[in-house]
Length: 129
Image (cartoon, rainbow, N blue to C red):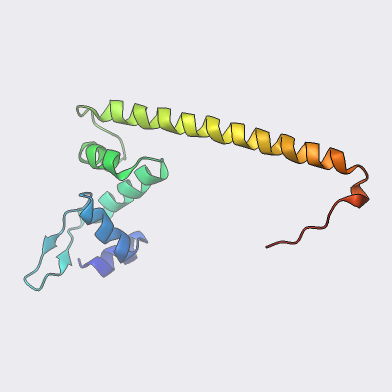
């Protein structure tokens, strides 16, 4: 199938499919005219890539994990894969903690600002931007 059909079947833009190829996640064949030709397994591969991206994994980790995945999105025990996933989970946990701290600070700042305004009728009017 050509890139347009793969894009239609997976709901992924052609531009994104080209990016996946550039970073080594997809490896289409090339016709003499330069057109990319994908086999039927490319649909499942793109779906796995999208699922791993949605899980927060960067493409460099996906490139390592992808050869170890199965159609059921399970990951076979390939060297280094479990460690890469654990490292990404740790990074997500750190980001989550940072976001929680920022949210807490913002919430306290809003509460303190509202408290300093006194009567709710005296609050400044804000406009949506």
